[in-house]
Amino acid sequence: MESFKKGDIVKLVISILIPLIVGFTSSFATLGSIPGFFDVLNKPAWTPPAWAFGPIWTTLYILMGIALFLIWRKGLERQDVKIAIGVFGVQLILNFFWTIIFFGFRSLFGGLIEIMFLWIAILVNIILFYRISKAAGILLVPYIVWVTIASYLNYTVYLLNP
Image 1: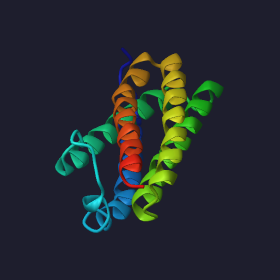
Image 2: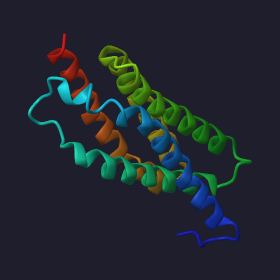
Image 3: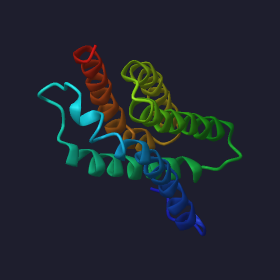
């Protein structure tokens, strides 16, 4: 286990804040669409309760931030670190835009297509992070599990609301 170096606390805080800010910002598209859009959609009985989404996503964003920190602290001079952080950025952007497409644009099909790209980006991110830091890769596993559930929910909602 690596010991904390000078400046690691700042890197850790920044790493956690990045996904939290992205998630918080994209949540504005969600909040306005829940009552008039999502609540009236036909959904499967296994849909998680609305209150669960906030705590789950907050936890996932924190785990993502810790994983990012573990990679960043390996050194930006390393090419594999740069690529892994770049892929992290791509999946975070895709995460942001899924919310905008599904809730903001109210596009069930667009959200479905976009979440497939998100899932692939998360898988690539896990692989790249794991090669650099096993702990960082493992920290992203709950994220892909949740996005797998969300993908199936998106698909099911799409089928139930022609």
